[in-house]
Image 1: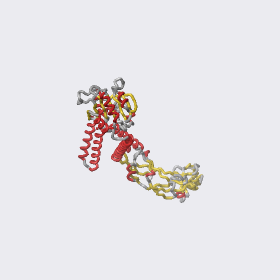
Image 2: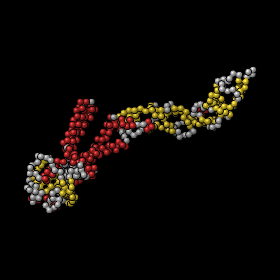
Image 3: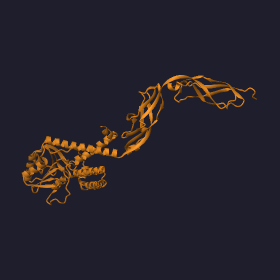
Image 4: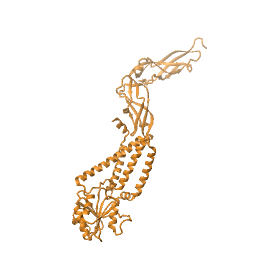
Length: 477
């Protein structure tokens, strides 16, 4: 548990937002491209990257170098080979399907109705284009269409492609037990390998199958033939049994409850893997680019008891060694680091206070590595008041032939506030140095008392005056 806490000790809310945002982007890419060759290529690149990281941990320098080169080339190949599929997704006009829409499986699709409808259309030589989306959504690659959302029936499906229907030239999108929309425009295939007798419907079906995993059924208006398109496969259908078998194989394996449950499990696993992936990348960056720095930080003492004061401390600054990502360390300012020690439980005399992580405030994302010193010795004293005599501090000598006959300090005593231990042995305080060499006649000097130790304070602001009398020595001229 401690190792886990240390691993995430520098975790900030910004890091959480960063991980969630990128994990959601990766999850959306999976949702948009699942069931296509792009996902397989990306998974292959991820496997190569994992091999590269293992090679780094084992010290296999050449293998790591080779894997990095292969990954770079593979990424370029994916972009070049699948540029049309990538462009079709990025050019989607439906923002909802791009950002948060989840394509649904074909659940409870009445395949027998589709088979009978298709053969009815073929018998009457009515051209038709029927689309059954599977795992991957098609909203990003199709255009136009009129929403219908009618319950699927043979009569409704056949009527959609009746020549007098304004929507008969487009495709009908089926989802489960309903016809979602009709008159939908599909992307045309640019392949040059298609049979010459394929018309616009066939090229549109092939174009959609190339970009998605949808199942597309085409009924030829001229020949009454049925063709089924699935990815790169083109199936010519010659009887009801063959068509039913193909539909059952691709769109009829799952019941609604089981299919919904499997889809939820699949998407949950994809989201969890995306989250774990970027958490690992964050750990890799935060730990792999870790930088150390050392700061000397002044200690701030919190004194809840105003009747006590600090007499001495074994150190006024504490040296902290911190670590974090290079960009965060470079952005740290000295005022962002604080050390506060609470003296609430301290007593008069010497106290040993440990300096712990709880006493130190660091910017988000910065980890504490070392504290020096980790214990401070603080001497506290209780504040008392005491009257002390004031004594002039004379220095030098009077001019030749003069003598000081009297020196009187007013007031003779002053009230001093300070620690009891410090005032215990003190009975007199002295003024600042008063030079005798400048005195030639009686007068008064305004003097400033000098308090030692410096923690002592005068209780009053009364001015100290020294009155002195000077006379000539007997026999002096």
